[in-house]
Length: 163
Image 1 (cartoon, rainbow, N blue to C red):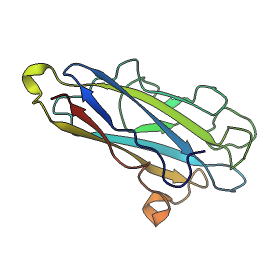
Image 2: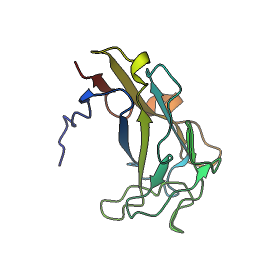
Image 3: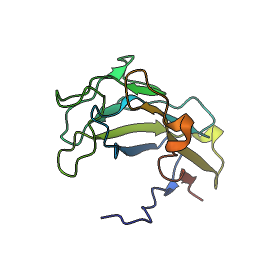
């Protein structure tokens, strides 16, 4: 159990051209009868060149069922999860809260490649931030993030270039 303090996802002593893989877990803690709809995740990075997604942006639920994205292309942010999700239980992209089912989770992984040596200064730190951009309690409901019920997904992550 992580507790309330979370964990540190920063990496140090990386080199130019290294790949960094991030993982983000989104949990629907809501109790709405239909789950969470219109779930959209975003990511921003200070890496100075267009980030390259390594093996594609991937998302699955807590049971390792792949979640479909809209559009159904394997790269890029923002990433919207398709409604309905992987189960017939709730019509939203993520099921309502459950301590045991795993269907209320989205596990997202993606990789960035650091710039080549000519563009990277020793000691440089790049910051990467993931955020929940939107979710609703019904297909046409109000955006919970815009209403103040969403937040950044953890603290920003940093990658520091080796000295």
